[in-house]
Image 1 (cartoon, helix red, strand yellow):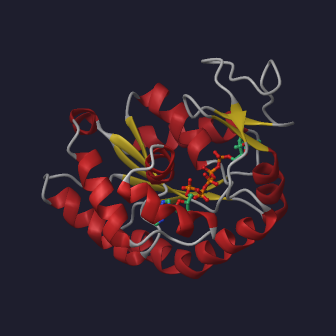
Image 2: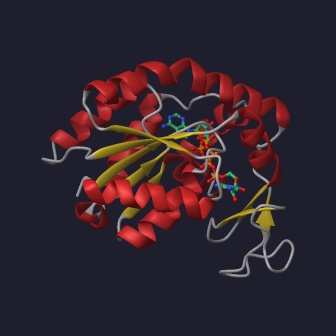
Length: 216
Ligand code: AP5
């Protein structure tokens, strides 16, 4: 299966994609995670991307497309994948279609995780991420067993640089500017499903998995 997860910052795309990848045995491709790895490793791509990310702006397509093509060249993608954070614009949706067409693939289903602003702000302001394995926690919604330490790999938990109030507002504005056209693109392809993502993570996961299985 090939799945796209859309939704505003903090809707739970990363949380759901990680759980879906385990449950459905699919590769998880997060452009945000790939960009943050490049920033952490100070690659040329990371050095170019960092400023855009810290300002809450989209990283230029030329950089993201190259990174995505490299990821699609890896063997695990052949068994299906969940795309988290890509596409974000109509141009990226078209680029994705051509990358996939060149590999005789297409997207089966697109989930739009619909979340309200107060929920988004609460989730992002309390989010903690493992520096080592990328596992996601939340100070109150999903606290780690030992504060500041990852349950899975004992790595250090940190707050993302772009989870500051001003940057969150900018990321939301960028999302809102682009999303209508993107949703229309997938609605007209008849592969769009909207899921209310304000409930707890297990309830959201259950709805996604039940729906995803119908598209298998
Ligand atoms: P990216 O990393 O993709 O960030 P985002 O889209 O803003 O989404 P987030 O990761 O903030 O939120 P999420 O929906 O994954 O929520 P999460 O599961 O973590 O992108 C970052 C930046 O990279 C962009 O701003 C841009 O600069 C660049 N970029 C990335 N892709 C790009 C592209 N395609 N083109 C150009 N630039 C690109 O959950 C949030 C918190 O809530 C967590 O603490 C979690 O524990 C908690 N939580 C989750 N679900 C629930 C629930 N149901 N109940 C309670 N708590 C929950």
